[in-house]
Length: 347
Length: 219
Image (cartoon, rainbow over all chains, first blue to last red; front, side):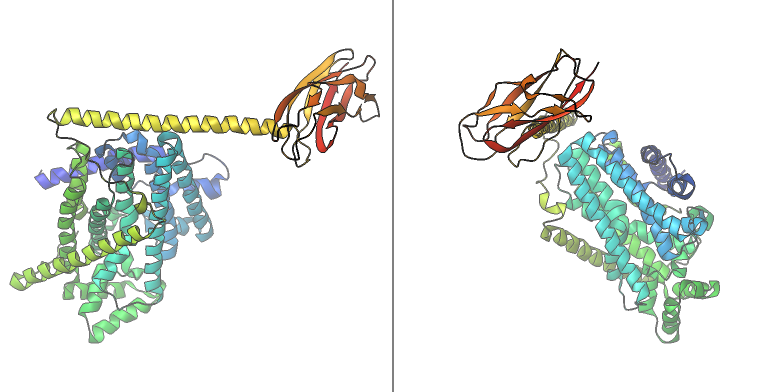
């Protein structure tokens, strides 16, 4: 196995280990109660489907790297996963997505009303997990983590609103800068920045400057999202677990779409604008294939890959700045190795 | 992921460099904007940050020793913080108990507090209980004599006021916001029918004061 392959395997092993811990913690908050058929069994569906567990892994590893114990961060990791699953349920409704983690989305299986209600329940359960921080960490630190949680949720919802607004308004006058600003809010804050900051808060007992983790978390999260966008177009659906080209069917303004909007004119540009103005059910497989072909022709895929590579390299510098005072440890190594893994992953 | 043609030649390399430069410039702007937003917002946790403290000193004892000391200091800090919170919580509970006791006594607003329940006691026995009485308002005055109404049951049976006594018999109202524990004794007369008897303790000269009392009489 190559060195890069070994690193990827080691990162995936660690992700699996942290994921198992976080899932155990999360399942402790899932009620075994009635009404099971219409609520609690639905609530348990997405958490039971696994996932990459990037968020809890970042939170738990960061806690230990900054000097804490993994057990101290389990309620926060569980809360993160619960809220993440709530976001997924609601996002799938908003995006009319069909597949989630290789299976039908919750609303596709049970209908929109029950799915939305189950998503609401997941939000409430996340609050219950956070409340346990008071007993574990004391009121002051638990309050700080609660503030962080609120900030993260707010940023994420703002980002989601912006993206939905672009689609509703058929926004076409966009630049890569707009895309980065969008994913700072929509993806990075809750996928990377927040888990790292909460881990540092717990591990250091609120004694470190968290601004440097915003920078590292953003570069790491942006590399993750750009790779996710590429996988959505080019990945193996069975491995990736989401609908192939689902982002295009949903009219998302990915980096490739924005690049294409800026690179085309004349009939290609008009065709792209017409496509983006359609409702999801009106977008055909032929339309989507034509857009992908335009992306290939205009170098949008290569642009996104190069763009992501540059961001990942900057993430390495940002990591060294953020973790300069953190002693060497397996957790520190893991966090650093995640940068390369973000671009190498195929699922 | 399926294979894609990379950028070709010098033009391709230039395109890559341009894409990356553009990405890095935009990313730096986005990060700075976000940090500035955090600094400006008093509501967000950014404003509470403490300055960074190096976790390890270079005191020549080696990284392992310094790291262990840092962990130990952190644990101690955490334990102390939890202990203080526990102490604070204990004080709050003590305070709540005191307030509950106060509410069980008389209050300045003249509202009836919760009932003081005495007994059960058999005829010929005494039912004893205590209540904290608080003078919350009003001008200082002479000590007020405590007395009780007759205690009556649903069928009209009664325990006369003479059967009820107080220790001390006077409520000291000289000091504002004074609190005093009063022992209430109800001697259940022979021949009293079993049942629940209700009545009130009153203070002469303090018309707003009244404490409900319930006495359970058994056979």
